[in-house]
Amino acid sequence: MRYFICTLIVVAVVAACDFKYDSLEATKEIKAVKAEMTFLNNLQEPESATVYSLDPSQKGSGAADFHGFKILGEIKLKPEDVNEAALEFKDAAESYKEGLALPGCFNPRYGIRVLKGGKVYDYALSYECNHLRGYDGGKVYDFDAAGSPRILAELFKNSNVPQAEPPAVKPAVPVAEDDK
Image 1 (tube, rainbow, N blue to C red):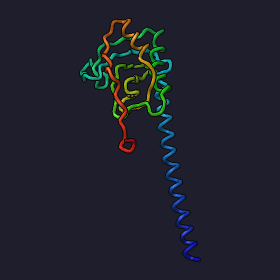
Image 2: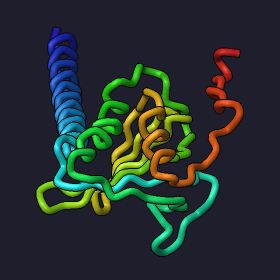
Image 3: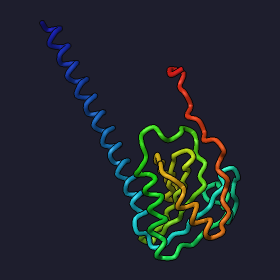
Image 4: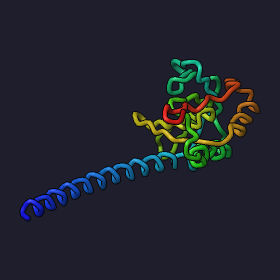
């Protein structure tokens, strides 16, 4: 009987510790998601913005660099165009469907630098890989993304800004060994 009671006490203590650990992990995850959503909201009504045409196959340097990618051209947006372009990036992150992002793939052809509340935020978008990456100083945020580059491509085309050619074939989703 004594053994049974001791076993119950040990099980109860272990279960309580596991619950505390799970709730701490859940709290950390909730805080991370809130930080990501707050970061995405910097794309709503920014004060100013510059969009970049990027070549993911070439490394940039100096003034021709946007987080390691070569800048082919840029457009400093007029105040009336800032929201439309910024929301293209936000919409891409908000319209993703689970499982679209290709693991290990990031080939951004579009970038945007926004100014909001006196701070600068950068975003690079890879429609090819269904991935949006945000840069806030030393912090990097990664989002699954979806959508079409049509509006951004037209913006660059209408402004005679060169664009990198997308690959003829979209990268394949890696197949796990278990799925073969």
